[in-house]
Length: 173
Ligand SMILES: Cc1cc2nc3c(=O)[nH]c(=O)nc-3n(C[C@H](O)[C@H](O)[C@H](O)COP(=O)(O)O)c2cc1C
Image 1 (tube, rainbow, N blue to C red):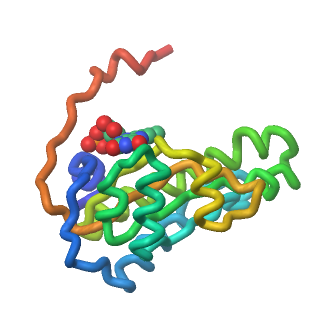
Image 2: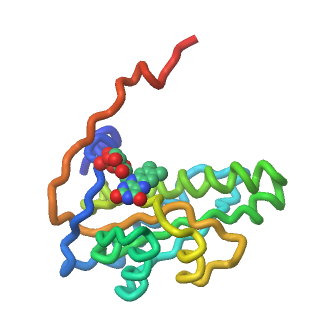
Image 3: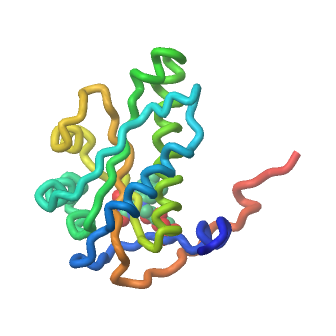
């Protein structure tokens, strides 16, 4: 079992999956539980996660994501959608436009790291037709799909991408 720092450092996008190795239900549930461990504004957890195993829907999701075929090939795709109405009920405009999006993104981040800790791989996908995804998954009209995570056992090693030096993004006062 890796420690937290190793897990974060090891994570990198994988876009080729072992298509004949399913993701175990138990593992997937343990990964999804990590979304609940994430902080959220007012502890409202203003998001919804759709677990997609259906090959037909994965294919349509890939089509809705500019034809990014690895989405269809991954045995599982998780779709993270913000629930702005839930957050707005407590926090008004700021809840709808900021907190719900942050809640959703943090939950997806926790899940993406849990995927690594569980020995699986993923890619975060942001490029997709939001309306088409909402339609495909029969999401309520006020839900905002923000990210797709394609998940599976890796069929490539991939590599760690270079990063900007820390001092370009950090200032100290
Ligand atoms: C907001 C966001 C949107 C992204 N959208 C896509 C995408 O549509 N397709 C894709 O292949 N990768 C996508 N990525 C993955 C990035 O390309 C990847 O994380 C980045 O190049 C760094 O590489 P690494 O994940 O291997 O560290 C996205 C990542 C983020 C955070």
